[in-house]
Length: 429
Image (cartoon, rainbow, N blue to C red):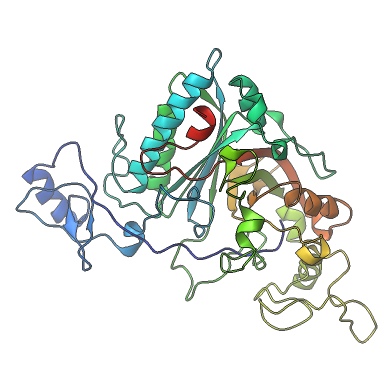
């Protein structure tokens, strides 16, 4: 879990959400009495933005809160869900193409998925038999992101278009991988600040797959909800540590170079795209929580209370790797996680981390099945994730408290332009 932080979410926008049928006057009156204003209709907010399903012309409801109106854009240079801020709820899933399905079926599927993603991210119902699960909500910062796995290219006869950067990841000593929950032909990442909006999107994507593809695996995650702290701050993980301090930021001059494939990169269909490494990392919380706070800080190399380096300062103060205490010992231990993952300790290797925490109950031994759905983005995983993970493999103090249980690597093409679908340049090129 390399030590880096996330950029802020982009400025929200709002669009109307159309319904399949307007609610009756009786329905509206009942909802008003029950205090569910906002569930009924097309409402003009204070800024004149329209949100919600269409209501009867003579009725009006309270506007959605800012949480509901926040909107990410589907069309753009890059796909959504990469540089957007962390969302409160997330789902990641991999699909395998059905037997006999090939390039033609894959193209039709990506076309359907893109149409659905565009509508749902705008706060509109699904174009295909909407379930009404998110009927009362606005876009809620929903993002839907699509990628291709290594196996996709053989299934579709597109082996010559498979990027070399998509070669399988090497094995690591911390790996205890479940092959049934790893890799896949297609990958989908969903994030939103409302649980029902996120589930609604997941269900729509699953239904759209139809007979063309079936779910290989699915994982569910969460983060702290926006507004839960007195001021915006770097997220904490389930170990209680501030996690993500040194993430690359879009304001940095080399951000695009590190995270995105250049416009004239290879292969051409990956222009403005990125590569996502997805790892389900189990945290051995019972063992971790037996450590004192000071011992936990030595493992990470940062103070638990505020994320500052053990060498002093604030969360953003540069770590002094040479600083020693009165006995001549390094203040930041030589095997501290934060020391090992620093880009300047890995030839400049960097990745944009955008994870979700997970908790899938208690296993038969009474141990929490919880940890991190680690998702990182980079222009080339051989220059981003791999060198850092190899170094962690050789002596990270955190390794005895975590276990990598599943893994996937996916090529995520650039964003779709108006009138296009994601992956069109690959599938129709």
